[in-house]
Length: 303
Image (cartoon, rainbow, N blue to C red; front, top):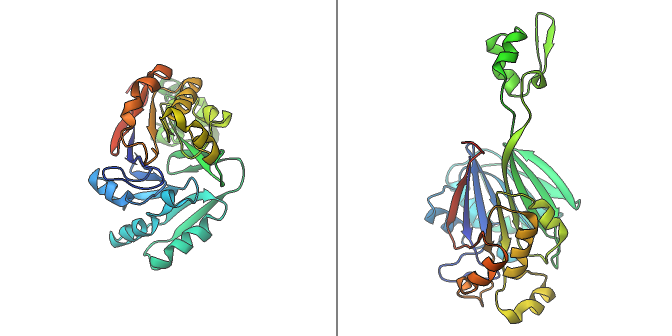
């Protein structure tokens, strides 16, 4: 299962009761954070989530509302006596940007490994997550992320017995290993069924609508997307500053056949985004006007 908590839903600047956009996922003892705006660590504490187990941080881009909380967040991880390495993924220049922010957090008890995104689309497998980064359409280099938890097929015990594979070797085959017993070589495909449906969460902020967003959100269990504006007169502003309206996000969710849409990254001018709920739901009925701290647990099909 995959636990998800949308820590903050604000864009540009925080408001009372609305921190800047960030998201945390938890799977199999590992935590993945997407963006780290001002107030992220406070929002995590409020949600009862520790920052210490965060293994991966994915940064969409380097505007302040997405990275300004990073120095304090790293210090909190260090003060929690974390020693395990941390991986930070982000657009070209990510190491330089993070090191610049670390002028006020120069000494940490853990190593930081950087993965710099340079291609329009890249895929990275870490700690059970399959992270797909895809370039979107903002006024600086910006990426969305689609995170999958893949699920292997069922183990066929009857088939394994018919092949005389010792029971003590079954677990190795289930984990994808190739084994040899008495000169016979056994591969996982001999005893594993076809892959089963996994879990998929797609995340995007700070972009105009593009086909690539809908492509990566295709059949997602959860699509989290910016809904910067809801007011009817803000479409021209969204186009000018390369953002998205709630209705454009709902259209992407509909086109992608996502199971559910959480809107986030609201403009500070939009104090009550829930006012636009009915119009958004008319486009995509499974839309949610998310608030800080919204969480859910996604389970594998059949569990």
